[in-house]
Length: 226
Length: 226
Image (tube, rainbow over all chains, first blue to last red; front, side):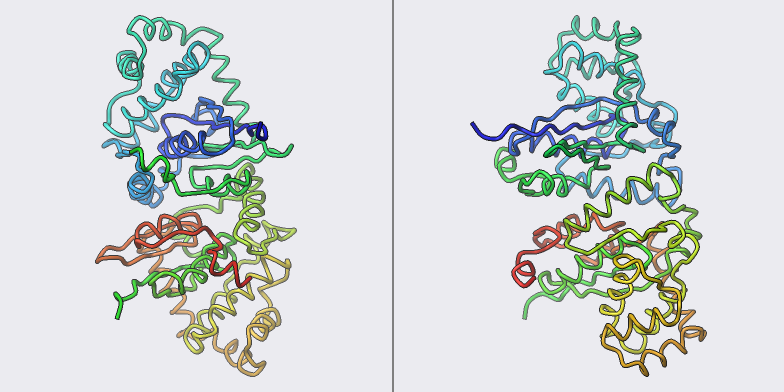
């Protein structure tokens, strides 16, 4: 028996494109590094409010940079990221409350499907510029991820229950307690120490902290399978 | 004869610890990758003002994160970064105007010494918590970098001339035209395209754009010499 896997938590919101990048990198490495990856669906709006931070795209020059940065990183990470046409409306007005409550319900009832349903929601909003606020959109993502229509509808019916709402609130509060002022954050528990890393660009540092090898955002073992 | 080196510009300010990280990585790779590195001393305060951005440390939760992030990255990058005790005073009140004017003068008169003098200024403020605003501090850094006392004093006498002041202004404006809202920025000129990358955490992306190999912040060839 080798050493016990270290726990790595990823707090994310499907409204955040950098969360998608961090998510894909960690999903790729979870079977390469000796880690136990815990996915933590959270609400970015709640974290912004609690920390007093503002979405970076509100500063025009940052907004311009982000659109180019996301495009370049998408190519480099081999994640099919495309900026929605009405970027600011998607982020500031439409939000992700129902989608993140749905993912919370998935995590409670069918945790084995959380990774796939999360990815399908990102594919909708951050790749194909499709809606993720309407019930039909969420159901379509769930079915694409392998749920039956009945299963998906059953889960959707639970997203306004106190159980689901409180769980999303608790996860978001946990991210805040770790010091989050945006998403994604990765929380690595290594040798009795807890490290919170912000953003999708600290994965090489994460490898360093874990004593694992960084092989770029698309590790070769995976590359061979793509 | 191999292909012509690509030009990579680094706009930086010694008040910015992330600039130091980016600077060291590019200094290490400039002889490994086929690039012509151009160092561009700029004024971060001017870029913040022009873009409407605010120093991230002003948001308390970001400030707390930054101190831990800088410490971890310093270890990983093998750069002896230590946070000054009175972090906010150093950044918000003391600033770097004289230091960056001095580096501008170095670049005009003794460009071969720019790298070393820049590093000595970072060593003062971001490693040993020493002053970089007083003439004596700047002279000490210049002498440590290999200038004679006379040479250093002669240069210091020029930092309030229109030539030096205007050059720093022009370089800072050039960074703004590239879209900077903070420092460092790296501007890569590749195949007729110009890419502006913000921060010290886009160096792997830079390698990708250049078609060069990323070997981490401390490339092995260099590691063997350390």
